[in-house]
Amino acid sequence: MGRQKKLPTVSVICPLYNAEDSILDFDRSLRNQKGVNLLEIKYTLTESSDHTEDLLNALDAPYLKIKKEAFSHSIVREEAAMKVKGKIIVFLTQDVEIRDDHFLAKLVAPIFNGEASASYARQKTKYNNIEKYTRAHNYPQESFVVTKKDLPKLGLKTFFFSDAAGAVDAKTFRDLSGYDGKDLPISEDMYLAHKIIMHGGSIKYAADAICYHSHNFKLGQLYNRYKLTGEFMKQNPDIAEYGVTSAGGGMAKSILRNAVKDRNFRVLSGYIPNMAARFMGMTRGRMSKPRKNYVMMRKGER
Image 1: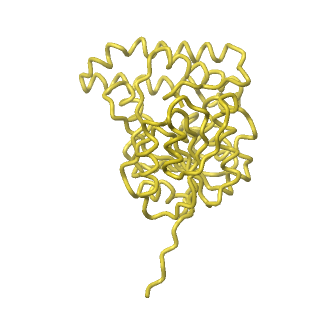
Image 2 (image 1 turned 120 degrees about the horizontal axis):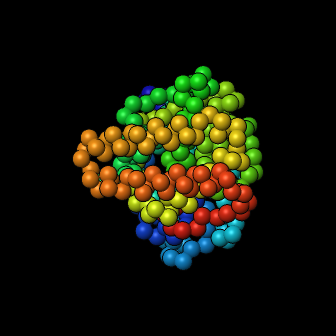
Image 3 (image 1 turned 120 degrees about the vertical axis):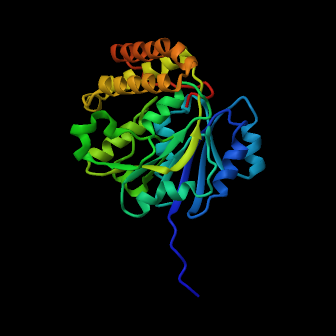
């Protein structure tokens, strides 16, 4: 009998809030994964107004329940990550759709093989809206690895990483003290990526690990998200110094160019208001005093 192939040991961390529409398919898609040793799925459920908790109990899925005021994008993930059993931590959000039974294996392969300290998946959207173009800009077809050496060329994009569908070496996360116990209302993934890169680590974009992560944000939601991002940049000037404006400008040009190419008139008609909401939110955020305990509670905004 041949020697059994060693598999990466994985712990999945996923915050939940009003997730009754997605939790059954989401949990099933994880438990169907092949090519990894999935040791645990650590759900943290923010008290909800729907039947998420009933469904978790029906699934016999362990979870930690917290009060609404206790939720923090960074702290919830950090507390779970410090206690995982797996050598690789996979961060996911409840609205990610996984259609490939080898998704986790593809996502964690760069870490398992020693190629990178962290990795993130290719995200697509189901909608033919402006997110189609932001996704294409941020998640191209080809994989690549970034290190500190790429800073002069890539600037802020060197720290691009998504914990909607991303993975990190557990030892690296602990050695870097995760998010340093900070309550980060947004961009906690960029905060972690910055630490990894600046400490000599590497991050791989694993384009073959594909998932679907779809939103249809209203202008007010976009404004609020970018306002929070502006606050984050103000709080973290060591990250912002690498070019917030140039990164945003590059994406805006990419969206316009590709929407024109596709003759996507729906996107083109809303392009200016959409970009204005982003710009005004970012500008206001960088001018305002950051709120210490802001919690983004509305469904779909995590």
